[in-house]
Amino acid sequence: MLIREVILENFMSYEYARVPLKEGVNVVCGPNGSGKSSFLVGICVALGDTYTERSKKLSDLIRWGQDRARVSLLLDNTAREDGRRPIPRFDNDVIRLSRVLRRNGVYGFEINQKSAQKYEVMDILRDLGFDPTNMLIIMHQNMPTRFAALSPQEKLRNLETSVGFETYRSDIMEAKRKLSGVLSEEQSLIELLDRAWETLG
Image 1 (cartoon, helix red, strand yellow):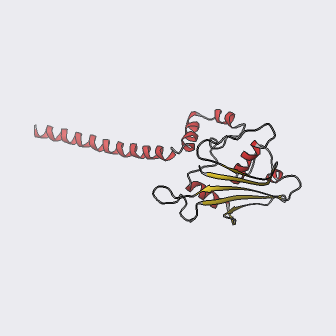
Image 2 (tube, helix red, strand yellow):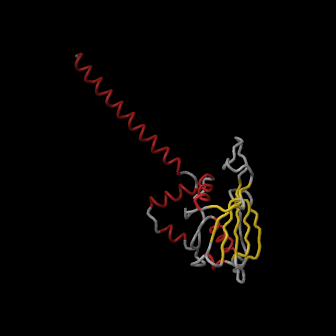
Image 3 (tube, one colour):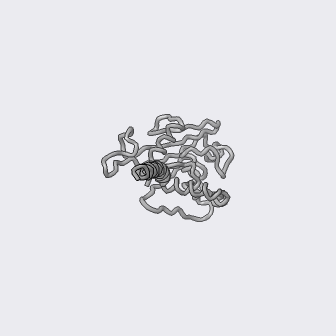
C-alpha cells in the first residue's frame, strides 16, 4: 500500500481525522454527508490537484471559521526484499507529504514537515511509480463518463499506466524494433548467399 495513513486537519467537514490504510482493498463507507468524498478530495489535493469538483478555489476547502487546512499522506518507504528503499534519498520508513491551504489563497507543499516545491513532490510520486494525473488512479464521480469518451488508444494508455504496464509496452516496442533490424539483416544475408550460389553455379 503506497499510502499508509491520511491525516486531515481543518479540511472540509473534518476538524481532525487520522485514517490508516491497510494492504489490499480498503473500503470507505457511510451515509450521505459523512465525509467519504471529502476524504477522497483530501488525498487528491495532497497529491497536487489544483481544482476539485467540490470547489473552484482550494481555499474554499478550508473548514468554516478556520484560516488554514492541512492534508498529510504518510507514504510507505520501507525497504523491499532486496534491502533498497523506493526513495533511497529518504532514510526512513515513512515519508510525510503534506499540502497546506491558507484562506488568503497561498498554498504550499511540505515533505517531512519542510517546505517543498511541486516538482519535488512529483519526483517522489514518480519514483514510487504513481501518476496522480491518471484518471484511473483516483476516479471522481464524473470520471467514468470522461473515461468512456476517450479513444480506445487513450483508454489503453491510461489503463496500462494505472496498473504499471507502461514500461512493458516501451520495452516490447524496443524489442520489436531490434527484432525488425535483425530480421532485415537476416534477409540481406539470405539474398547475398543466394547471389553467391548463383555466381558459383
